Length: 80
Image (cartoon, rainbow, N blue to C red; front, side, top):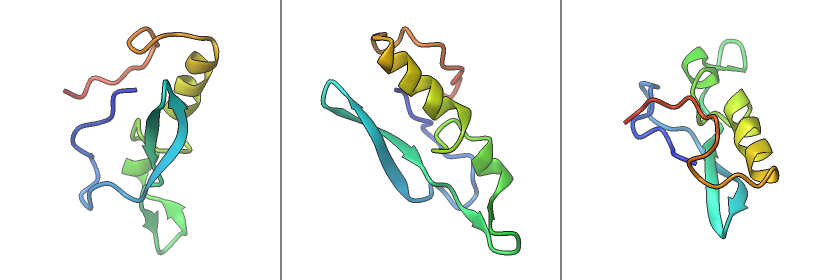
């Protein structure tokens, strides 16, 4: 998994979480930041590819379960 190099959130990355390992390498996602007024994740975090409860974490895990190698998944990350 390729991680977003620069977090789009003005506060930087939230607390990291390791969700699974591929060939011994941890796949790290982010819990994001919580809006204290609503107790919901801030919008920029919900839309981030590294957000643990977002679609990309599930896509990466499903690709891993299907046995795809790094770089062969359908990740839409265009951060460079």
